[in-house]
Length: 300
Ligand SMILES: O=C(O)C(=O)CO
Image (cartoon, rainbow, N blue to C red; front, top):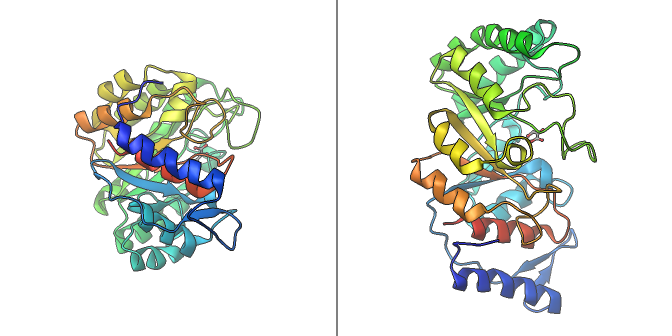
């Protein structure tokens, strides 16, 4: 993979990996993973980075995640409940995007509207009070609903709540997910209706509000649609949040996967994207090393 990340920074990250392999300058944490004792170099910070807590939860509680995030120059820990936001503030961090209803039951099915709207209203209130700008939302599973009806239902359903989001200056970010990878419950979501970028963009355009945005998950987009940089440029006005992971496998952003992250981060910068990029990969090795590697790679 061709990388625009500077040689020095790659060497820096690979020397940490090498040190880890040799057991040098690394501290064993209570969770068993290793962490460098030296603070990493400050980031350029052109890309606002965030870490998605569910991926690291099995290694680190919220306090530890916040501590590590601030050490790595990450500005947010996301998809974590409002009761954790004070902990984030202690470390000078925000929550880039709040969680809400799950991806299985969403706005494509009117039977789920009441429940989704109730959760979203609560989250919007919490976001407004806590200074959080985005809340996640989903189409839901097909469950026999054809794609055309799915769009109509989503548009009608989102229109019931978007006014409340507008009043509170909170974005609803609709996530596109891949339906191809059936190997693991969090690597892909077979049956998810919003499984193409333009399908979600169509819904967003029809809702017709500046507060209705796309959660552009690079990993999911790569699997279903590809042509990532062109899509980022095409849909620049609708991107509210971004996620990462290596493909295939939803692992680290390393040389074993196919997505050219530095070029994509450059494209985000070029379109003037000011939101956050959430690191959302499932660690397959030392979580700290993987996260640091991802952060350095995306710091263009
Ligand atoms: O990205 C995913 O796979 C999710 O389900 C939610 O962020």
